[in-house]
Image (tube, rainbow, N blue to C red):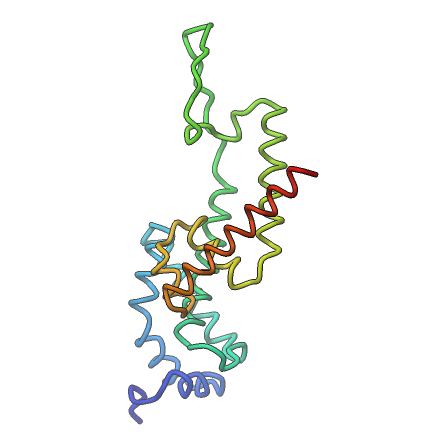
Length: 197
């Protein structure tokens, strides 16, 4: 049987019934695009290849979770993106605290640019404020609908281009831009409200 002529939805039906050839046809259809997508998120070929295998395993074991809404391609890219974001978060948590660099100058009154400041090198009071503000922003983001939350994670945490994120979610680029715009307005408004309390 020639599976290449089957639609994605038909292949998913075959995968649900544990048809290995149907799974292989879907895998061949999307494997190179998903691998490129994963590499663009994690910037590490070995990690991307591991995540690709995990994505394919999820498709095989969780085929029943695809509910027929949206495209199969969008569903595959969502799985891979979520795995990539989880990988980036766990890598970030595992990073060692950088060594403290001692200055030869006792009167070091220069101020480092914000991008050079590591939260691990802040004083106790500053670290507490940084931690509280980060937690507050995370709470505000968590209030957003899932599709907006996912988009923010892709664009701002995984540094994906809006076009890539839109493709991964199976939505038009204009829709992604609109969601980001309204999410940013909501977050700014809520942030001001929190600060005023």
